[in-house]
Image (cartoon, rainbow, N blue to C red):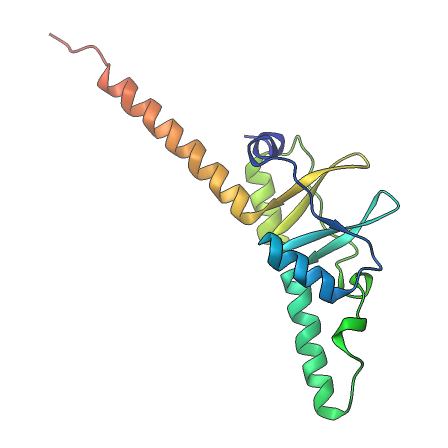
Length: 154
């Protein structure tokens, strides 16, 4: 199974923000859409990925900083200050096993899928797990049907 097949099943809905978007607005969007990542786009180009991991890291860092003195309000943080500016990307022709290996090795739960300079979508670890489970379930049904219809020796 290829990345393009998973994207086709998942759909191509993309949630993007500009680098200048306030982090508080990003968090609201992620909560409202029930998503774990936003693609940061700058002038039509992939600028980075913002995931709940980056949000938690910046909030934890600021909480620790507040213990030693006042810090500016969270509302003043911009997406570009927090995003992963160099996310690992997947290609539509990539095999799902290669995608899983990359996600595990890089510890990135969300990978943008790029075809050259064009963003096709974002795949989460959950999307990949669902696709693999559905493929295995289909293969299991086919094997059971094949065995059930096997000619009896007689």
